[in-house]
Image (cartoon, rainbow, N blue to C red; front, side, top):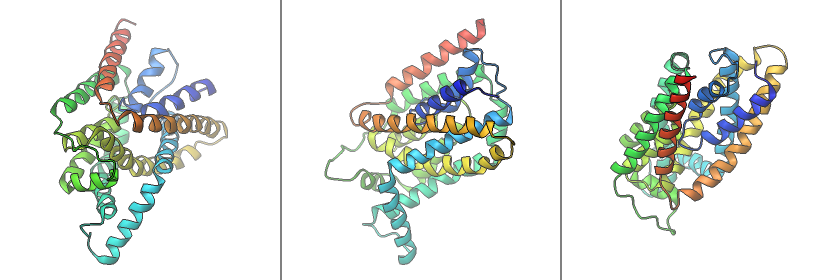
Length: 287
């Protein structure tokens, strides 16, 4: 069982690391081992606790972009009524791009999430994949296509809908499934995919947060009944504390990143992931 201090720290860690392209799951696996916390990370309650913090993060994504989500849902509804996606209806296309992008991660998550979490729930393995995550982020910046110059008079959602194709959305969604392995970042994978198809860093971040919302939310809600089935009020209190901390941290993280990516790149996060993974790996090896 976690204590409340650990629940607060892990909640804050989840809220910061999920929007940032640095792997929240990887940090949740590595952090307790670095500080000698006696936590069984394969215990069902620990996984359910992480699910509760993911629910909180998904709610923040939804609330932060609620105006976009209202337009997207209306666009999907218009496409049903018209029985087609009109060329000028950017929000209808964006909505269906998100549906297509959610398919691969949704299928793989249902089939393999628990198995991968159990296989790779090792701090050493997560540290190695965190280093790999840094290499992938840096590689995406080097290999990126020339991004369309951001025009202030054009909405970000319009730019995304015009640039991203159906096939590309599927590939970006497939990249999102890499986050099932601790150490590989969900947001990092989707941002990198967005860069490679020609999005700016800012638009790639927004598409990543929009794409993450239904996947994180659906996966977390499927596991929430397990948390309530644990019995007793203490696990629920710990989950609520962790979730509240994750929500607060996630809100400020998303707010910061949307401003950061208006003029910056993934390179600092690539460097952090590689050095943090390397440092953690060395420390755990000599420990």
